[in-house]
Length: 379
Image 1 (cartoon, one colour):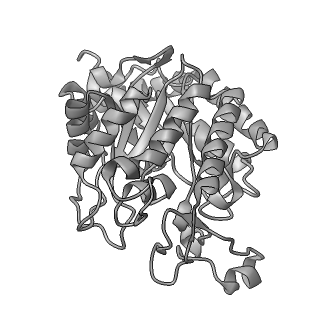
Image 2 (tube, helix red, strand yellow):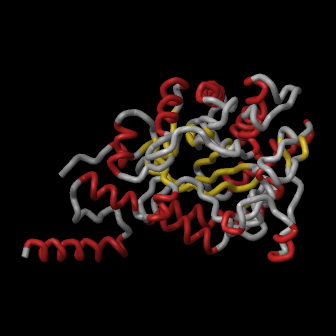
Image 3 (cartoon, helix red, strand yellow):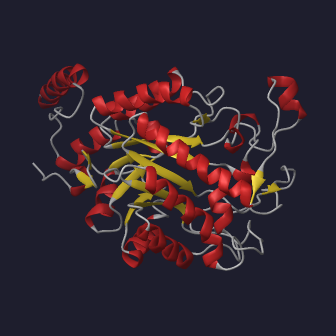
C-alpha cells in the first residue's frame, strides 16, 4: 500500500491540530434570516466533517447588519446569533473537524440580491416581491461596485473605528461559540479588499494613497482582533492576491501585506484572487491560484492555503508535497462531493477496503460492499 501523503497527515497551528490539511472554503449559502444560522447551515456544514475534512470554515459572517452582502447572510453581531453557530461548531468538533469561521464586512458590495435572484444591487422589485429593502452601504470611497449599484457613503474616522470594534466584538463571540480558527475576510472586493485596492480606494487621508496607507485599516483590524482572539488559536486572513484589473492590487502588494500581517500574529494567508473590478484579467484554469499561494509562502515567510479549481487528489497532494502551500481548500468541489477527503485517501493510498476513516455508521457497510464488489470482479 502507498504511504499516506503529507496532505492527509495532521497539521498543528498554535495549539490547534487538524487531522489533515484539507479545508472546506467558506461558501455563502444566502439562506439565513436576520443573520441567524438554521437547519440548512447545520446540514450543509456537518456533511463535510462526516466526509473527512480536517477543517470546516463557516461562510462569511457579517460583523454588522449593514455588512451583509444580502438579506440571507449569516451574522454574528449579537449574542443570540451565537446559539445556532455554537451547535454547529460543537458537532464539527465532535466529528473530528476543526470548526472555523470567516468574519467580514461587504462594504460597497452590500445590499445585494442573492445570486439566484439577480446578483446585482437590490431594487424596489426586491421590496415588492420579497419584502426585502435595500440599506445604506459604506466604503472607503464613493465609488459604486458596478453600474447601477448603490453609491456608498464614505467612511469617516468614526465609521472606521466602529467597524473595527465590530470585528473585535464578533471575534469574541466566535470564540465563545467554540470556533478554533478565525478567518478575517480581506478578499473578493469586500470592505477590507476595497481599502487595499487603488481601484476602490481613492482617499487622500491616512487610509488612502500609498500602499502603507491603504493597508492601514486591515492591519489595524488584524491587530485588534488578534488582541482578543486567544493566543493559542490560529488567525487566518483571506486575500485576493491580485485584483486582476489594470492598475489594481498586485502580487508584490500581497507579499508586502502578508509580511505585515505575519508580524501582527496572522498565521495563514488564504490565497484567492479578484473581486474588486468589473472584470477579471488574471490567470484562470485548474489550480490557477496556487502560484500566488506559493509566491506568498516563499517571499513572505508565512503559511498559505491554496484554493481555486483544485479537483483531483493528486493535484492537492502535489501542492503540499512541493511546498506550494501548507493547506488546500476546496469549495465547489466539496459541494459536489462532501466525502472528497475519504475518497482521496482511497485513491492516494491504493487501499479500496480501508474504511476506517469513514463514520462507522457508513464505513462498516461500505467496506462489506467493496469486498463483495471485489469478489464479483474476480469472478
